[in-house]
Image (cartoon, rainbow, N blue to C red; front, side, top):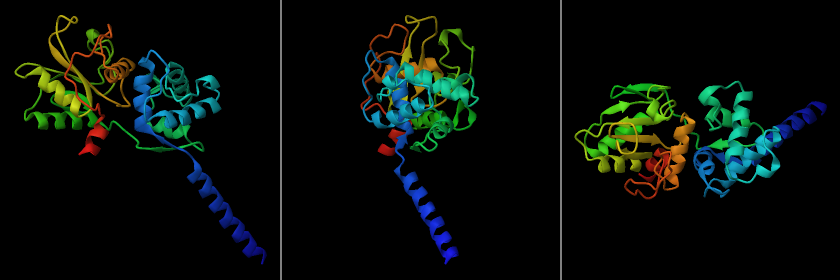
Length: 268
């Protein structure tokens, strides 16, 4: 009888633990990344549609760690939340781009232990060389799809993970997800449109805008490896801006809705 009671208690404990696990809130990583790009670029503290509950769960976890004041637990992934998340990443031993305050899968899962589960996880994949340029597997897949839609290959003049490689790039190529593409022999507006369609924030850059040759600049939205300047360009794109330091109005072709690569693939 005592043995049976012990077995029953063990079973009840397992069931109780399962119930607790199932009760944890779910954090949509895609939604968190979108908010982490857009919200720091806003002039207000608005909540990015579809991200509020996920961001709140992340902020509560940061507050529980003593990294975020309760007043900023509001569903808005603003600069204070970015700073708190970067502090959490550093506490886990991360440095450089891995401690920029932009959530990666590993840090988000770690933060969520006993607090939330992570859904719609997103990873950039391994670093590869394509069209003679370094990029990650996610960026390559996006570029391949844009080329398929265009019916032609594109020439990449600068890839990703190129810290300090081009001073005129203002650090946007320091991390992943960013490409510069030649406009030789192409109609720039068509290329920009297809890049935007598959999930890039993309613009046609001209010499009149800065100290560079004419080219197309593309930022893979929601790439966890984006450098902070590239994160900001992605946020500005969502907000209808040109991604330049002057934060002027977007001068590229309108693509509606603005989708990430994952959203594009789900849309079929």
